[in-house]
Every structure is written in structure tokens, then in C-alpha cells.
Amino acid sequence: MSGGSIYDLLHRQKSGFKLPLLLKLAIDVSEGMSYLHQNGIMHRDLKAANLLMDENGVVKIADFGVARVQAQPGVMTAETGTYRWMAPEVGILVESARVMLHLPELELSFIQLSDILSALGPWKVIEHKPYDHKADVFSFGVVLWEMLTGKLPYENLTPLQAAVGVVQKGLRPVIPQYTRPKFVELLERCWQQDPSLRPEFSEITNLLEDLASR
Figure 1 (tube, one colour):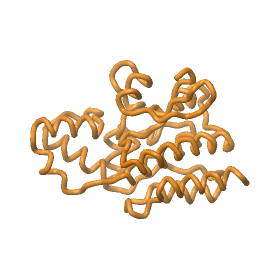
Figure 2 (cartoon, one colour):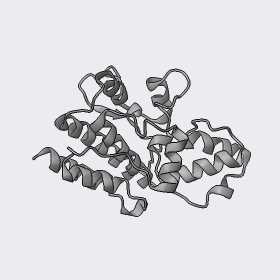
Figure 3 (cartoon, one colour):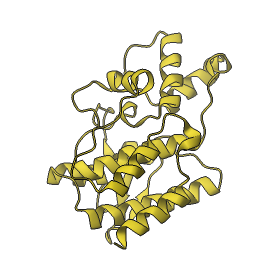
Figure 4 (cartoon, rainbow, N blue to C red):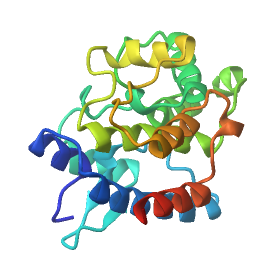
């Protein structure tokens, strides 16, 4: 993608997007995620580094393998790691797997850990708190916050500290005071601890389009 990722663009300009651009990009992502979910596909690693812009400024959702190459050619770092965007129900599984396998406090994605566990066999042991497509909605809320602020989520915490805060303490990114009330409401709905209370992407798209029309 010639335009690079949204993560790259945000960190080049060192600020968030103006609301009209933010909403345009967010609608692109929401429509793409709605299509994936309607076809039974979960992304599981949604973050700004995995959202690639083409030469026309249209956002394309990259899968995990593509995004890892595009966003960071070397080792994944805290800046492009997964913990900061993880829904609490996913974070519980990842940390359980890491502890059970006696892995160091490395930035491993759920996908990497599930591959390890599938190979070793004990996956069903920790699969006591399953998660569904609403985990992507939580991550999308964090992406919206990224685009609003231009900041790394929980930038003063390590990735693991952020994950523990989200899972155990209800930690969420701090929403700027200047944010429009309807946008605040959308963020908070995406970040609900109970996945069933988070909106579907079809509803999110409608809400974003309504905001963009005002």
C-alpha cells in the first residue's frame, strides 16, 4: 500500500486526525470489519498499524501476517504489539497461556500463542473464557482513540501492564475533554467490559455516518 499505515501517518504528523478525516477513515474500517464479521471472520489483531492506506486514501484492513511485514519489518515492538488493543476477555486467555507455558513477559499476540498451544496440546485447558467477534469491536474503539489523539494507548505503561490494567482494573484510554459527546458515547460502548453490550459494526457504521453528516 503506497500510503503506508494509519499508525505511520499518525506518528509522522505527531497528532490526531481532524474529525472529518477521522470519521472518513473510521467508516472505511467499520465497513470492512462489518463485511468480515458477516462472513464469519474475526480479525483478532485490529490496530492502527494493521490499517493500510492506498494511493487514494482508502483504508484497507490487513491481516496479521501482512500487517506485521508492512508495519514493522523486524521484531514486533511495544509500539506495534497487540496487548494495548486487546479486549479484556482476550487478554485473560493470552496471559493464562503465557503463564502456563512459562513464557517470559514478551509481546506475543493471541494468534502466536494459540498456534503454540495448538502444537503443544493444552489449549482446551485454558479455553474456559471464550471470546467472539465483539473482541474486534473493543480493539476498534482503541483504534478510534488512536486516530483522535495520535498517541500510543497507555503510553506510560508496558504492554503487559496495560493488559493487566484492562483485564483486572477496567483500565481504558483517557478520552480528551474536547471530544464530541456522541463520539465519547461510541468509544465507551466499544469498550464495555461485557462483550454483549458492545455494538455490531453495522451499527457503528451508521453512528459514524450520522456524526459525519452533522
